[in-house]
Amino acid sequence: MSNNKPTLYTSLSPALLHLYDLNNAVVVIIDVLRATSTIATALYNGAKCVIPVDSVARCIELGKRIDSITAGERDGQIAEGLEYGNSPFEYPEAFIRSKTLVLTTTNGTKLLHMALERGAGQIVTGSFPNLSAVCDYLVDQKMPVVLGCAAWKDRVNIEDTLFAGAVINRIKEHFSINCDSSQIAETMYIDAQKDLYGFMAEKNASHYHRLTGFGLEKDIRYCLTPDGANVLPFYEDGKLVVHNYR
Amino acid sequence: MSNNKPTLYTSLSPALLHLYDLNNAVVVIIDVLRATSTIATALYNGAKCVIPVDSVARCIELGKRIDSITAGERDGQIAEGLEYGNSPFEYPEAFIRSKTLVLTTTNGTKLLHMALERGAGQIVTGSFPNLSAVCDYLVDQKMPVVLGCAAWKDRVNIEDTLFAGAVINRIKEHFSINCDSSQIAETMYIDAQKDLYGFMAEKNASHYHRLTGFGLEKDIRYCLTPDGANVLPFYEDGKLVVHNYR
Image (cartoon, rainbow over all chains, first blue to last red; front, side, top):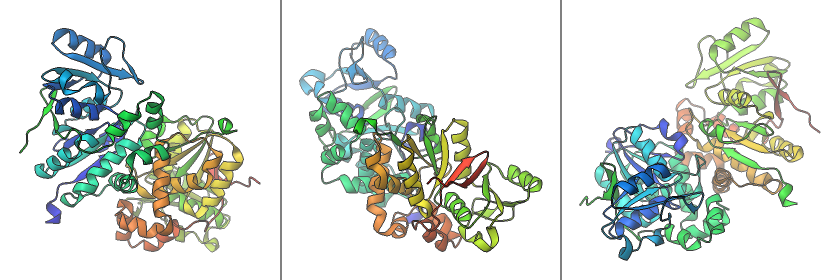
């Protein structure tokens, strides 16, 4: 029955997350360019786990204490004191299998910690490379959902909005959606879906320009392509691990 | 030269307004359903001024002190102690000419006071009934612009986003726009422009449903129609007055 469907909301920026009740919800952390795309890729390629941390200092400290790879960027450059960056292409299977990745990013890992502090029922991460895994999980759980866009320093961005829209477009009949942000996200996705990369370029997306300025067109194309790393990163005990939910 | 164009940003919610520098900017307060549509209408119909206040108590207090009409709603009903509501149809010329309207609303007047507190360079109000007046003014001023959506209790809404998009679609060549929220707003508007009312109904906009539940379809149609009350409400000395800028 329609009334029994769980709710779905979209938070377009971390600065709006407080408007939504996370306590009994699955919160999907969305940072398409590139944190959550890279998390899915590292786990898909066999990483033991990804430990998301919210500062470079904490990343360095953890890297000294446990056998791990430390990674993170600030403003598009590998942060001082860390070894690797945010590109999914830095984490092929031959390199990352069975290793622990400690990762800090400007927006995505920060949002994950906000969701934790606000008592999220469950936390998973979403990106186009694991779109289907996210959608399948959300439908299976039959719990309320909050799609949390990491945005850019609290400013709404196109790419995270598009991913929220892709999820909504796929699973909306399973949820009760009374949320204009979700409608906006789906409308954007429907407009963009035939050519996400072209849409990003055409719409002059600020992050697209920041990244192409760093020569990262290949990253962007990968991060906008569905199901290249189709696992579900699930947060438990301080780590993101692959969730085998079926 | 392109580099000399002033910037334009869109704040999709009052909870995002702090991200934008208002000090040297024209801030457009947007509360399509219905505060800013009603403000334009009252002024177009000859009101001496509209005094926006941020609480019912302040509205009642001012109403006792000055010869005025007090108006405001909370959750779609005329607030206790006030005389009139938020509908533009309550303010025909025969009623409002030469009068002072003291108005409080759930979202729009609150955002106006936030913009004041944050040191906005200039404050005007925008809505479809005064779309052209707003666009002409912004182009003439050659100042940075922040389009401020009043939203609904900080949640992004479709109708204010659509108006921001309509403004951007009309005047974008005069501004430097590096703002994904602006791109999102314009994309929504382009999708919706052929039938704004139908778009609102189809997208299940939360405010559309709140208002049609109160029997306000006529209000919504008016509030989505361009240039029915084409004046520029300009805030100075605590009042919104018609700005004769040409």
